[in-house]
Amino acid sequence: MCVRTDVLTLFPLGIQDFVLLDSITSETAFLDNLKKRFNENLIYTYIGTLLVSVNPYKELGIYTKKQMENYMGVNFFELPPHIYALADNAYHTMLTEMNNHFILISGESGAGKTEASKRILQFYAVSCPSTSLLDRARDRMLVSNPVLEAFGNAKTLKNDNSSRFGKYMDIQFNREVEDHTGEQSLFTTGDVAATH
Ligand SMILES: Nc1ncnc2c1ncn2[C@@H]1O[C@H](COP(=O)(O)OP(=O)(O)OP(=O)(O)O)[C@@H](O)[C@H]1O
Image 1 (cartoon, rainbow, N blue to C red):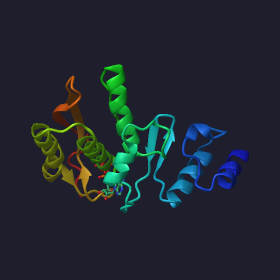
Image 2 (image 1 turned 180 degrees about the horizontal axis):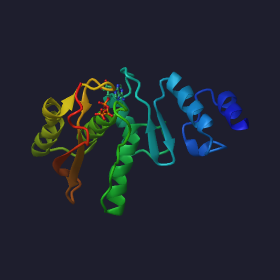
Image 3 (image 1 turned 120 degrees about the vertical axis):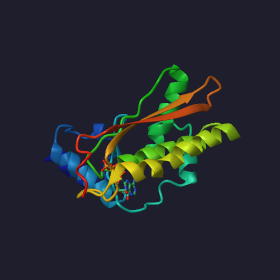
């Protein structure tokens, strides 16, 4: 199939945005592209402004402070796909449109949802304006994770540290564009008793 050949031959690192695939309905082309990028340790791929992430189950050195700085205030499509680009885009769109924005993270157990939410929080902790009061609020949100995990996580067949609850995180910014307060709500998943 020509799409598959194109991806494999013309783009050695795969295509970084699925909308550029000739056949966007071809599952084979989709998976081939993901696999090709994954083999090059490129775990992120866009579908327009959506971000597809594949769990590498290893440290790739892609969450450094330098990487954060690279993505701060940069046009969404200017740099290779990254969770930091998504976080930065949501933040700056909120500033320009002056309305609320959601980042919805979904995937099967062990896909990397919790890790992704932590990376987004860390990005905001570094990229947003800072005062000692705000730093304290941010630190609390970041360090609350192990506490929540201690009570709400369990080992399952798919994930050694599986969250047995859903998480709703609300980060509010004031008019001076400092992150003002943070709030987390938890809701249980249906199979909360299915521990291993
Ligand atoms: N981006 C990443 N880089 C490196 N390792 C990762 C990454 N994302 C996830 N992992 C690894 O995979 C494990 C499972 O990820 P995580 O707990 O985030 O999955 P989850 O989707 O939240 O699962 P569940 O729904 O079961 O809670 C993590 O403990 C971590 O070791």
